[in-house]
Amino acid sequence: MVLFLKRCSTTEQEIFAFDLKLRKQKILFAPLDWGLGHATRSIPIIQEFLNQGCDVQIAASGNALVLLKKEYSALKFYPLVSYQASYSIHIPFMIKILIQIPKFLLAIREEHRMIEQIIKAENIDFVISDNRYGCWSKGIPSVLITHQTNILMSPSWKWLEGFINWGNQWQIRKFKVCWIPDFPNGIGGRMTKSDGLKVKYIGMVSRFEKLNLKKRFDILALISGPEPQRTVIETKIRGQLEKSMLNYFIVRGKLDGDDHVRSEKEANHLTSEALNEVIASSELIISRSGYTTIMDLCKLGKKAIFIPTPGQTEQEYLAKELKRLGITFYQEQNEFDLTTALEESKKYKGFEGYPDSPNLLAEAIDTILNHAI
View 1 (tube, rainbow, N blue to C red):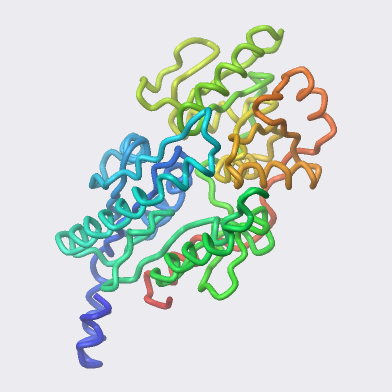
View 2: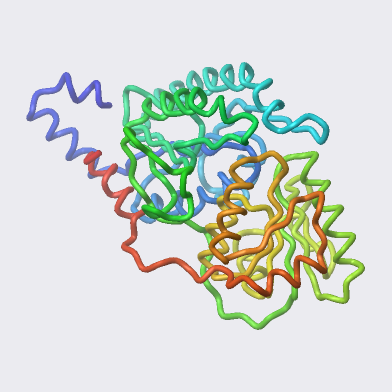
């Protein structure tokens, strides 16, 4: 569309812009499928586009595709190539990721080809990508959503950080603008450092609403993340909760089962509305320190105990920062002890809700829809 406009006369451009206002603008939304965080944080962004009268279509893979189909069954979906990231209990996280880089680069190249085909077939006006680096086009405005403009490496891999971030920011610059789901100087800290990049902060987006509900559970365990670590942490938490005298509920984070409650104490997966109610009616949340989970708990003003995924520097950094700030207690996975964690968590204030701010997401969307980026 941009190339077309450049070839048009001023009058033709005005007619085209007028036509764009008359019809629904077509948005192609493409979230990453590593875990469920990218898909779940896409929900409020997709909803805002729908609220502004856009025709939203979704291109995704894996569990992200499954989850969004459950949330938006009436929308049009396209399957994308999956990055097929795999993890190991025995091989250190960073080594496992580095081994898979050639596979990831091939997936990025293939998803770019697939995205261009969808754009051409559907006459798409804008592409919004949540951490899928191949989902952009030179022909139309493309936006990347990420909270990792600066990728942090563990101490033993610090020597690689400069090279990794050069590659990361080279990919980001292929997009017209980068949206950061945070506030300036917000929870992202060093991860959202954006020197030299064109960025716009859209606030901490969450699909949830704060509800004033009666307490139902002492503890809610939100299990998430890729295998085999998802099963490892579920087994560890479940065993200790079952021995406790506490009223608890477990959401297993498994989309391959049904969405219904399996018992009074657990469910494979819950819809956004049901999960919102369960979180709101729980006194304390135990979960991974994933970025999307943190945004959700901040929105709801909850207290939490975090168990970062071993080797995931992003989750480890966030857990340590939130502990340092006196917000949440965390323990390493291999050290997790429920009794100790519950006692220590009493020393932390928990999340206190979002700071007052304008609707940064609505403003960002309005900016691109009016071609002001």
